[in-house]
Length: 157
Length: 102
Image (cartoon, rainbow over all chains, first blue to last red; front, top):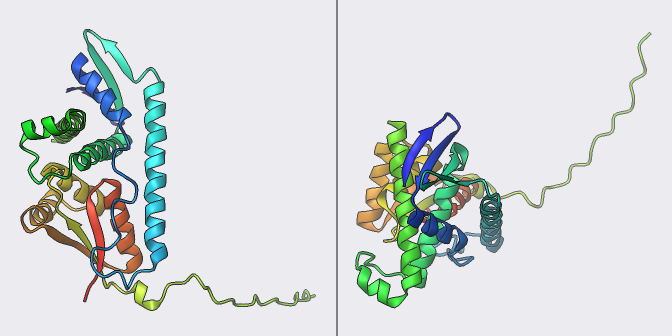
């Protein structure tokens, strides 16, 4: 994945064929984190209105629904990934940068949960043996995430 | 000639049942971020910068606290603001919660 060009409102990234396949696979596996994974409070929740937690979960569910719809539009748009000299280019509006990061991290965390929330994520062979698909999705999402952050940082410098 | 003033109708004041107690408006709630080994350090730093508008140095300090100590208190706010921040952090799939500041 590499940064091709930037404008004040968007960035264009290039993917090779293998990256394109992984990228689409990652997007299609969203959402991966189970709904209501996180409690509002980890300590005593006596001070909280039970409705607050319900509202937070509802708001998160709505947010994820919106993200899913946006991914579908993006995937079905047809013009987002354009063949360009043996690569695939896609344009990302600057306002969508955090949206894509959220999607990628959801996929990464969701597949990490599927792998049993291992403390050690740096033992690829053990995780690959356990669930190859979950491991590949987790790793691919992480790779795109890091590349986006790195490229954006270079872009800002 | 002065116009005749229309009779004033004073609206009946109905207590807002939805209003939160004064306690909820006090900055007595902590926004806490917990360590998840799956999240990249750069990502966590970026999210803190985005959500709280911090500079990189401050965001990294809190990220390292999460990484090394398992959690970091990111803000002390009213209940509503704390809920807002927790929601924003959870949108990025960070493990965040709010706790009462005892």
